[in-house]
Image (cartoon, rainbow, N blue to C red; front, side, top):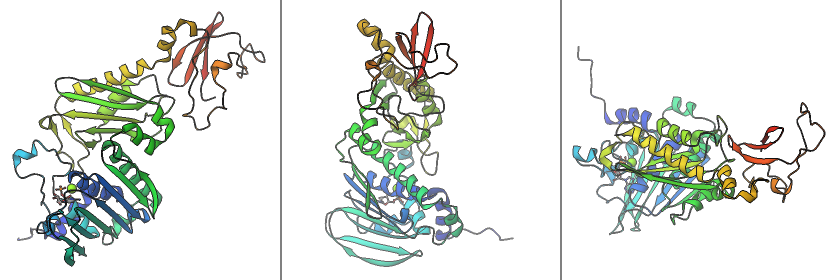
Length: 411
Ligand code: ADP
Ligand code: MG
């Protein structure tokens, strides 16, 4: 009898932390999302030892009122929703009021913040106790410093991947946040070395250049579509650029980065035939939808959301990607310009790991030495070939009286 007890706050925060603070990247994500919710224009993230030693996030957002600051550390305390009604039309990234108390239950946290009106305030919580509480400068914005994450949860600490992998996860997270928020300037550094810097001028090509480099930036194809419920717009890097990981498909719904296997599949279906099997494009899909048609409150880390009419959205994504890529279709290009039918169009192969030698485009070398040892024409040069098109994003198709030829662009 009498064995059920109400947990104390420290314990319940640690349990919440198990869901919210999975790894270093999730800590960074929660802090940056808070900065974004505060309408920041500049967000700087500085890491020491992959964030394990220290994560420091500075922003120039609206700041926290000095008298509110202690509340920011309290569970279920949020400035973002006030009623049940708000829950059905969430426009902010956060709303659960769990991130800061969860992080503070497994790390030492300092917040320095000011709304820019009058003095700011600095609070440090160490081992769950307030150890510093003092006035701070009045410059508008917030600085959050998180030190020694998981110092009190050795099992969790042991579960972290290598420092290198944790850092890679953080970089991927920040890259995606920067791509999803092109109008915000991001700055990421690790042990004082700069890893990413974006200008915040809203130029998506530029951000892809910052994140993925020139080859990707110049091969981006835009797509867009709209119906009564959704607006979809995005960019996809056309073949032959592709990745083994799906993580370079960034899906954003009303500014929130989401994970959606179903919608990602719709994108993949839309580019069927353009990319080799098991390879994934680099792409950004932005979905705009009325907040009442999407439920963001179905996942503790707010990664998954539920759309009303999701099937319709999937079709919209698939078709718009398909339409955009078909405009780039080499076969169609050739048909539109009959004088080029005899020779293939010049190919930009700059996306390869080892780019072809300067000036060596297929257009200049209509005669290709035969490599296939089983071919009856071994040792000879190929006869003149008519270029037909491209398949699987990799093979060039040629034909002549003798038959059809497949040429692997990677070879
Ligand atoms: P949530 O984001 O779900 O509201 P958090 O625990 O992440 O919960 O943050 C608690 C509150 O602290 C927020 O609602 C917000 O009012 C305030 N806050 C946190 N970080 C910032 C920031 N960088 N700028 C302004 N306010 C912040
Ligand atoms: Mg938050």
